[in-house]
Image (tube, rainbow, N blue to C red; front, side, top):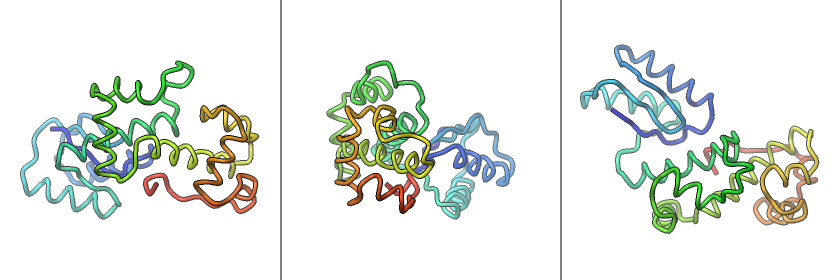
Length: 187
């Protein structure tokens, strides 16, 4: 049985979900990845309700419908690429080709679906995630803006700076001075 989980955005999230599954008891878990749980057996309605409740207490949601699951897969793939550099960087593959390959669905369908559920395009979501990653890197204060721009595949530090100010209302240097971020699952 495969379950889709909303708000799993980092390795700590995976650890928390694994702990919930272990605490729940007699579940035979195949694997837990960002956004998904794979169990060996199907769950009864009662066990599913209990698991849903346990996950909810920790800030996660089980997704029931196919469209929400696909949107969560899109988000997970984008987060993996931007925040965890899972392999697309350096291949010159753009996000639309990457998502089409990963989800085996036409990009325009994915973008329309994403927009209808999230109220923003995939491109806008990618920009928000890139800005969140830039915030993280700015707070660490170990890279220049040009290096961050290169890592996030922006053409220049100036373009990243303009995007950053458009999204946050602050310049990157002003943000670095303030050092404030929010969690990526709330983007």
